[in-house]
Image 1 (cartoon, rainbow, N blue to C red):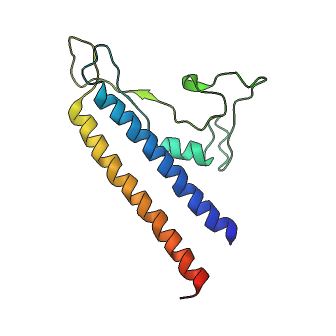
Image 2 (cartoon, helix red, strand yellow):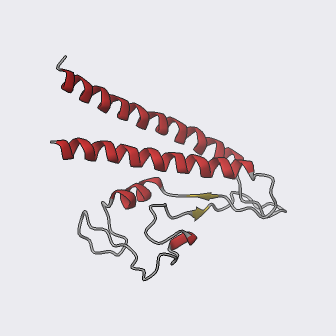
Image 3 (cartoon, helix red, strand yellow):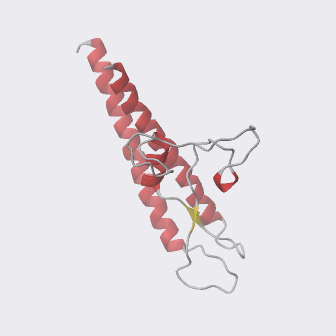
Length: 144
């Protein structure tokens, strides 16, 4: 029973961390909207959540719940996207530009604003899920 409660809270905590990371990326894209040559970055949230919770395998074993990690012989080895191997960071993708610009900047402000608002609503929903779970646990513990 305790493991199920912990797993549910850990899942939502992981989702919250990924939402905040995505918010940071979108804010970075918006901040660099006028930077010549800047390429907007983003990641697929559902794939990143599956990867972070270990519900899918990057190596393609096809066995649910298995996860393959990169084997390294030294702690300084780098993994994908230049991050330390074994770090729980999502795979970042480049956003394709909606229209060409003379300065080669791929930030589309309409897309970024919509993504920012959508991610904000989903972040708040995740917070509400966590608050509801904690409230339910508190009610069960106090017996009210």
